[in-house]
Figure 1 (cartoon, rainbow, N blue to C red):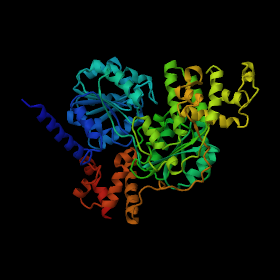
Figure 2 (spheres, rainbow, N blue to C red):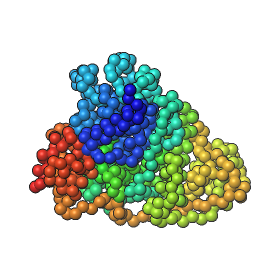
Figure 3 (cartoon, one colour):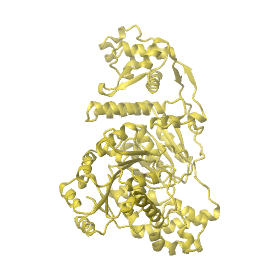
Figure 4 (cartoon, one colour):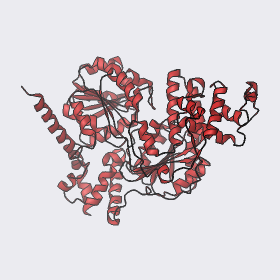
Amino acid sequence: MTSPHEISAAREAASRRVLKDVFGFDRFRPGQQEVVDAVLAGVPTLAVMPTGAGKSLCYQLPALVLGGLAIVVSPLIALMDDQVAALKLEGVSAEAIHSGRSREANVAAWRRVAAGEVRLLYLAPERLLTERMLTALTRLPLNLIAIDEAHCISQWGHSFRGEYLGLGRLREVFPQVPLVALTATADVSTRDDIVQRLFGGQARVFVSGFDRPNITIGVEDKRSPAEQIESFVRARPGVAGIIYRISRKKVDETAERLSAAGIRALPYHAGMSQEARAANQEAFLAEAGIVMVATVAFGMGIDKSDVRYVLHGDAPGSLEAYYQEIGRAGRDGQPAEARLLYGAGDIATRRRFIDEEASEPERKQVEARRLDAMVGFCEAVTCRRAVLLGYFGERAKPCGACDVCRDPPKVTDASREAALALRIVRATGERFGAAHIAAVVTGQHSEQVTGRGHDRLAEFGTGADRPSPEWRALLRQLIATGALTADAARFGALRLTDIGLAILAGTRAFTLRASAPRRKERPGSAGKGAELEPAAAELLGRLKALRRRLAAEREVPAYVIFPDRTLEEMAVEHPRTRSELAAVKGVGTAKLAAFGAEFLAVLRG
C-alpha cells in the first residue's frame, strides 16, 4: 500500500516535471508551490496573490498533475479565450464554452470534453450552474474546480457579480472534487466572505505579500485634469501606460486630446462595440508605446509586462480597486509609476454612486467605509505605501519612495478648527454631510441652512475666515484620521467617533495637511524600465516583430506566444541551440517544438 509520504513525493516530482516540460520554468515563483501543494492534497484553498505573481499556474499545473477534467470558472469571455489559446500553445488540451462562440463551436468543444480529450474547460458561472451542465459533469472524471477572479463572489468585493453567488453549490454537487479560488485583491472582509460563501467557512487561505516595491506611488491634487494628464504622458514618451477615467465620456475626451497632441492613445469602455474594444486591446498588447485610456471595464486578465505607468484621472471607489488597477504596471519587475489625481468632486461622485446603488443598507455602509479608506489614502500624511499595505493587513516601514516619503507634506496644528467643525457636526444632529457643515461654518445663508435654523447656531459663520473648500478638506482629513465616519445609509451623514470626541474634548491634537504645490512633470526613474545594451535592444525588437507575426497568423494576443520577459531573456542570453533556448524561462516543450526554429533563426542572424 502506498504511504501518504510516497504519494506526496510522487506529486511533487510530477509537479516539477510539468512545471519544466509544459510551462518552461525550473522553479516556482514565491507563493506558488504552497498553493499547488494544498490543491494537490485536496485541501479547499483560497489564494490571494498580487497581479503578475502567477495565479493561473496554481490551478493549471494541479489540473495536469491530477489528470481527468478540470473546470475553470472565469468572468470574462476574452479572458477565457486568451487562457485557452495560451494553454494550447503550451501543448495542453483546453476549451472554452461561452456565449461569444457559435453553437457549432460550443457543441464541438463539448464533444471533445465528453470524449475525455480535454484537460481544462473554461466556463462562465451562469453556464456552469445550469442543471443540464451540472448533471453532465457528474458523469465525467472531474478532478478539480478552480474559481478565477474569486473576489467577484463577495458582495463586499470591488467587482461583485451576482451570477457568482450560486457557486457555493459546487461543494454540494461535487463534494469529493478539490476546490480552489484565486484573486489578486481581497481585504479581510472580502476573504472571509469568499470562504463562507464558497467553502462553507472551511478553507486554507494563502495571502502572498501585497507589496509591489517596483511601483512608485503618488497622489496629486486635481486642478486641471486634462492638462495634468497630458503633461504626465508627454513626460514619458514612447512607453506603454494605462489611464483610468471614471466615465465613458471622460475616456473619449482624454483619448481625443492625447491623440490630437500626437500621442498614440486608444479608448476602451463598455459603450464601444465589442470589435472596437478587441482591436484596441490587441493593439495595446502587441505594439509598443501605446497609451490605453479606459474605464474599469479594461484590465482584468490583461497580461502586458512592460506597462510603465497607471494614471488615475479620477479617484477609484476603494483601495481594492486601486490596488488591482495599479498592479497592471511593472509586471516585468522593472520600475513603474502609479499616479492618482485626487479631488473632492471625485469623492462626491463616488458617494452619489453608492447612494443611488440598488442595494441593501449594509452593503452601502461597507462601500462607504471603503471609500473613506480611499480618502484616507489620498489624504495621508505618512508613507502612502504603508497606508495601502496596512489596509490589507500588512505592516510596513516607510518606503522612502512614495510622494509622501520623498516630499513630506506640510502640516499645521488645526486642533481648534477641527473642534469647531466637530461641534457643528454634533450640533446639527450628526445628520448632514461635509457640504452642509462647510456651509454652516462659513456662514452661508442657503435655503438648506436657514430652513433648518442652522443659521441660529452659535458656531454659524465663525469659520468664515477660511473658504469653504478648505473646510471640506479639513473634514476629509477628519474622516481620514478616523475622527468622523460618513454614514452611507444616511446619505453620507457625518458622525463622530471616539477619536473625534477626544479632539472635541481637547485631549487629542489634530494636524492638517496643507494643499500640495502644483507639480511640474518630468520623466521619473520609472520612465523606460530596464535599459538593454544597444545590440540586445535591437535583437529584442526583431524578436518582438517575429512574435507579432506569429500571433497575427494564429489570431491570438502576442503575449500568448511568449511573454515579454521571455523575449528579454532571449535577447540578453542570446541562445544559439535548441537546448540553450529550452533553458530560457517560459520556453516549454510544446513551444520549443512550435516556435524554436523561427526564433533561433532570428537569434542566430
